[in-house]
Length: 215
Image 1 (cartoon, rainbow, N blue to C red):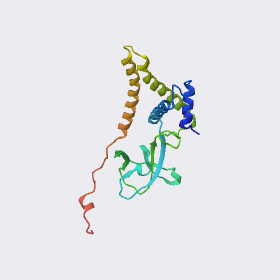
Image 2 (cartoon, rainbow, N blue to C red):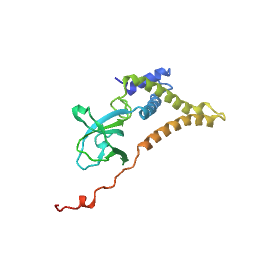
Image 3 (spheres, rainbow, N blue to C red):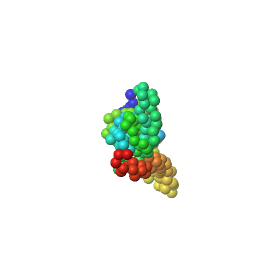
Image 4 (cartoon, rainbow, N blue to C red):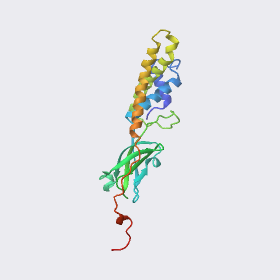
């Protein structure tokens, strides 16, 4: 079972040689673990799936109706026979509207759809989460990442307290650059998934749509 926030904090403080939390306080380490988890979610989020029954003549579906925590769609498939053994990827376009995740089929279907998507990991006790979704084998990664960011936070707080030389601006810049890289990565990830809604022209002829008399 993956560690809770409390367990991770204890391990980070032990790794940094501060078991009493005198220098690396609970609040500092919590912030460090939060940053580490955010970085982890950029590269290794949870892969999830849900089934949706297709509706005749319906093109657009909202994934966040099925899972409010969904982040990005990986694939949409038609459920095949023999217990999903013949699932087939179908054409779709993902888009974000009002911070909700939608997808638009290129051809409607009444078959059952399998939507594969990502969800961010959570840690029990962090930001009101009640479940740790990381694998137990990845706990040490959170400890290492939490220790790194805790050191960075502590270093930032101590620069002016111990440094009165002309190097102060450069010290800030070096630390800031690490956070700038992190922010840019998150921003690029968010921008990549923010695609506008799409549509296709109606290919029906006038007599297909409006011609109602019998031949």
